[in-house]
Length: 549
Image (cartoon, rainbow, N blue to C red; front, side, top):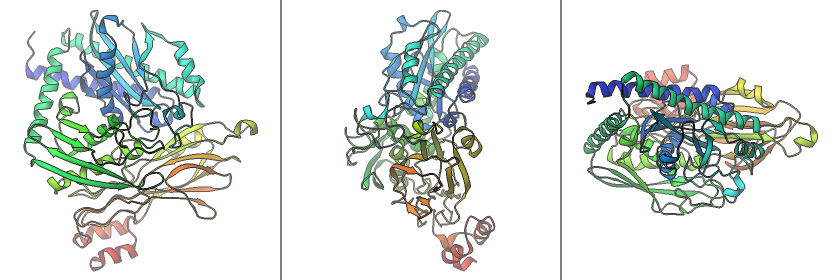
């Protein structure tokens, strides 16, 4: 049956609705707060060749864009001739899935009239997989928990009970992990069911025509967007805090007629701590950043991703090789958009925002080692907070907003309900946004402590403490992050394992975004609105925008 473009577009729109329902099934069924409250997931539908056709709106670029490649890998590794209805495949291999062990990726073949017509896939974060846990202290991947190579999790609808027991036996949160795995299974099944129902409704027996239409249309639109760009190569170096010492990330961005090439040549080598980044994850965030500027209105799928290529020397910190430790790969992986924008701003100076906080400000917490003997609460929890985004060429930055991760901030009430943690204060940090014609977004000021007489173990891996977000086009830098413990005003480094003792309060200040344009070009009305809203103090406004007060 020949399909008209109008009919194919209607089916494409329906497919977008199907995958969104698939993603929501995962969020509603998940046990871990970082999944159900923060949306740390991805969900997608793929054709029989493993090409991503649609993705759920909810989800992180790190999960979504790595999943786009992982599905190709898994669909090539397992022969369709050996697949059965109800089969589901799984892995958490960082170099196939999403860059560290805590992210489980599932892929399910979708059968229609006895034939594999495509796949559904999803990824989400499991809160604990043994080892040293969610922190940068591991010396190799084996320190960091349980690695599961590509395997069959479900066979003809029957869950591999032994595999599930192995996962539970290697976790401080076995019930949560089991619940999250079943949520991932439900996500795949929901997508499969809705996809076959859609095919039946539209009277199609395969996805060939729809798949080609989606991919070709998206690729064509992306190439048209690239054709309008200036051609050439631009370089940028971004200095980041690192673990023991500061690190330089290098990039060269080449815009050609029919593709973009990003090369990390010159980037520092891997380190002996778990902040190294597999290339699949660095690619995911780099390409996401480029797509936010280039062809941003084109849906994300195999076609729109195809013209973007990323490379880097093996062994550099953005192309870590197994068995390098990678537990906190997001720390530097989420800095790559600012690295990319440093290049792109030279080619498109009026399109690219200032630098932002970028890296999520994670707070992985768990009980202290003596908790078992003392009878204290046992828990493992990963809290997520965000800083401010960089100001945009025509708008202020966004405060306490997750860019580039897209992971929503952890909720106070939910956290206090599942762990012995008490929040004393959580508010925007006044004066943390960089001054400019357009102001950078603000970071947060958060205070918390143990709610019971027990110590908390904190595993830090954050950025922007030594190197704040830089302004662009004359804009000023955002405020750096700062982590302290009271009483005593004890400053903590950005990375490492820390004990928060009973009676102590952790003060967690996330960074602000850089400003865009000269501060003296900001309108008096905008300055007064900032003061009235408590975003900028009168003293700071006087010193930064003096003639407008």
